[in-house]
Image (cartoon, rainbow, N blue to C red; front, side, top):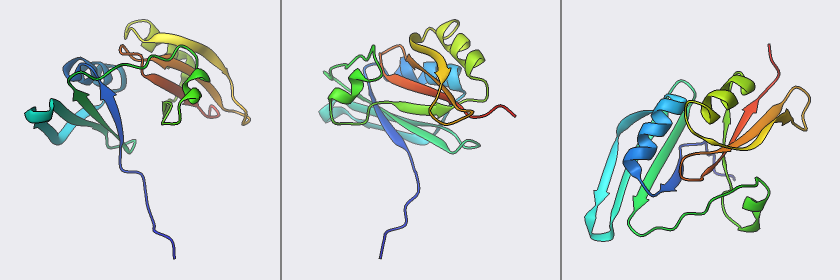
Amino acid sequence: MTTAARFHHISLSVADLTAQEAWYGSAFGLTQVDERLEVPEVGVRTVVLSDDAAGLRVEFVERRGSSPVAHTDAFAATAVQTFTHLALQVPDLDAAFARLTGECGAAPVSAPAPGVTEGMRYAYVTDPEGNLLELIETSRE
C-alpha cells in the first residue's frame, strides 16, 4: 500500500524575512496566510506566503547566523545534494523574465530558451538573496 500525498508547501531559508516577504509579494503576488512563527531562543522567524488560485505555498524561514548559497549557474546548484531551485510556471516567459530582471531586481542566470518538451520554454533568475528560481512557460495557447 502506498501513502497518498499531495504538495503542501516548500520552505526557503532566507537572511532577511521582511525583505523577501515584500519581494515575493511584489514579484509574484504572494500574500501572507495566517502562519507566522517566532522562536527567539533559536533565532528563527517564519512566514508562509501563498497564491491559493495557483496552489502555491512558500514558507520563508529566517535563522540568525545562516549562510547564503548563491547560484550563478543552474547546473552548479546540483553539486550539492539538496533542493536546487523553485520552479514557477508563468503564462508569458518573456514578460515575466523582463519584469523580474527589470523592475523587480532579480538577477538573470539564463535567458529564455526552448525546453526539452515541445512547447515548453524556461529561464533562470535569482531572487535578491541569490535563491535560484526557474521560470517555465508551457505551450502558448
